[in-house]
Length: 120
Image 1 (cartoon, rainbow, N blue to C red):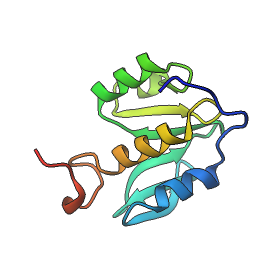
Image 2: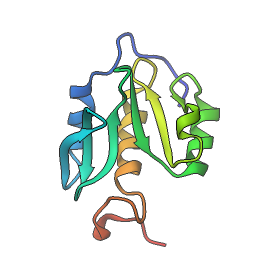
Image 3: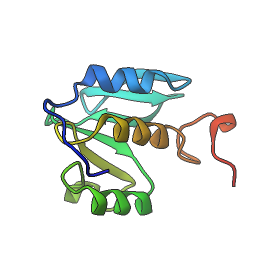
Image 4: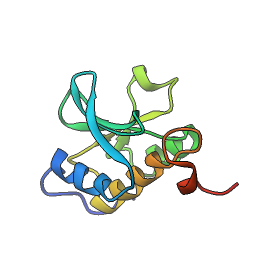
């Protein structure tokens, strides 16, 4: 995290491709924006600003990511009490986004099919 920045923002199409490699991902909408779901449960969506992605995340992991790379990872007051984080598509590294989408997809008790959840 926190390494060289993108020259151009990551497009929604790239987000879709990265998430599309995960089993059971469905496309839909949430709050009128494109969204990614598993079994109907939201795990990521394009924020209405069109410049950031909203992803499901464990609050402890969110704090770590925001400290490590505040240019890419942030929250607004709206998300402060919820397990979600915003990702600036112009600042996040593709590899970090890929990892974050996979983590969001498999959050225990959140969205991933049980055979794909981490043990423990």
